[in-house]
Amino acid sequence: GAVVSQHPSRVICKSGTSVKIECRSLDFQATTMFWYRQFPKQSLMLMATSNEGSKATYEQGVEKDKFLINHASLTLSTLTVTSAHPEDSSFYICSARDVGPGTGYTDTQYFGPGTRLTVL
Amino acid sequence: AQSVTQLDSHVSVSEGTPVLLRCNYSSSYSPSLFWYVQHPNKGLQLLLKYTSAATLVKGINGFEAEFKKSETSFHLTKPSAHMSDAAEYFCASSGTALIFGKGTTLSVSS
Image 1 (tube, rainbow over the protein chains, first blue to last red):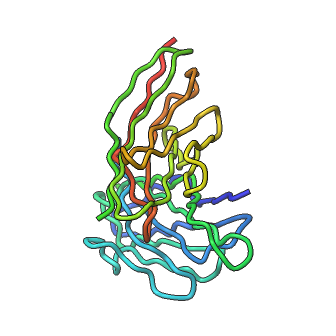
Image 2 (tube, rainbow over the protein chains, first blue to last red):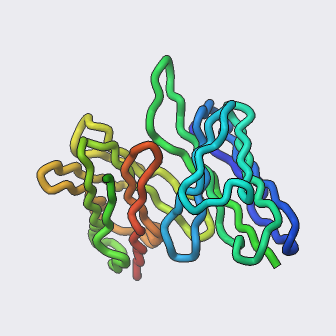
């Protein structure tokens, strides 16, 4: 249980194009999903928190117009990198917080396998 | 403010010897604490979590961690390392979102 998928796993695009990355919780519902960015040999940097049915909350320094986040359902969040540039090349990882049984939720986040974005 | 400090950026052990990856946290309350493992070009896999139940937490693949409030520590251990344990390990504390340490690279030699 608690599986999170990401698609695509790897994408190469030209500078100026937009890229959409999907994050799905396969066997649980997630009212909250998170998007992280990871540079080589570094820790994860939280970009934004995505709440189902409402606007995402972006961390300081993250351009919300460049990194569009949509969380249209309890199992799907998307990150669109608009007008991508080479400096946007990175490993993007999503996670989903398990709502948990009954009325409560656990604060455990389950991570997707990541998407390697390369912008030429 | 919450923070997580992983005391070693790189740990090297021989196969069959014990593993100790150190993590200290800073929080004004008792947080939930997690250890994740990341293999190259992969996402993070949850090893174990502490959520104020038992202070000694057992996880997957033979790993365990002990929550010590007096030392504000949550060190990860394994009695006997396997080659497949070589990976990046992250300690994290829960808040509005997870707060990660900088990671510890575990190398295992034969």
